[in-house]
Image (cartoon, one colour):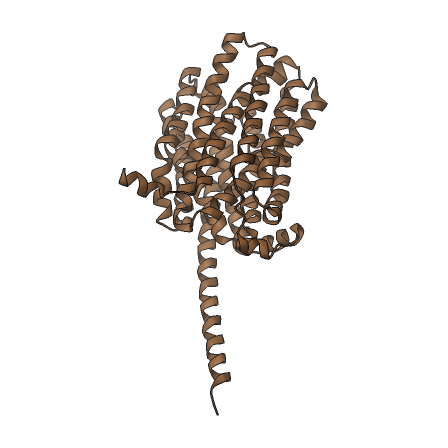
Length: 426
């Protein structure tokens, strides 16, 4: 028990509340996503390329949401954007259950991107950083992420059972979407009642206009380098999730049951090892951790490039990829929070969260075109290049951070000498 207490670090109550909120919220999303494409294509008759356009609209809107939600969280607090995000998700999922054509689907996709997971993740990451000291922050992010993964694992399983019992009809799918909306509404109510505001007093005392805070954040060269590296790493992250099931089935001949095995193994690995890995990340440099994550993404891509078997896919995805994912999803926000001034913490975290949206809007398009051309090896080669470029960016971030630290020390010594000279008696 003492070891468990040491590993978890006795977190603030709000971290535990966010863990349960994530579990329910992701469970609800897990009811929607497995059958959404099937519903929109098979039931509503929307062509698959246009279903993909809707996903691209959602990704673009989530990036825009990052530019809005971060400054909003820094100016008005973390609770407001969290409530708006989960409430917006409840509305979006309900509207998905009643749209009857392409125009409605595209419009709701934009709404889901603007007021959905991106806004919620930015605000809850900022709240976790507010209530957790830096030396425990990675564990706090890991703990909340485990809750989300448990929900994400249970949601699709439940959706599959409900769909099978209901015969996979349009009415069954609409019922699942409505269930997602109801669960999201319950999360809104729980957050509104139980979660207290965490915006630090220092941030409250020096609030800036949203546009001003965004400009200041984007003038931080360290953040820009981190964002560039983040987009490259999330490119690999988002592309593998979209590509590997199709690649395994159509190019390697892996049966559906085994595809479910390596996808499910990812979730089991996260549940078992996220907290131990987060504990290690808390004890080392976050940049070093991200470098290790980038190297693991490169190993995953190299394994896929040089093998074409189920075992190779299992090692690449459930092994190297999953370890890299666990590092990226914890060390990335922890590093962004560490770089941020307290009054701009929400903005920095929202901008880092936008890396996912940028990558999610691009990587499936590239993968789809290359799979259509039957060039899967090019996909893994591009991923190797992306991981290598991310490593270069993170090394540059290390050098830049060390340079700025030395520069600040030199400035402090210079000012100390000047003050001593000015006050020295004649």
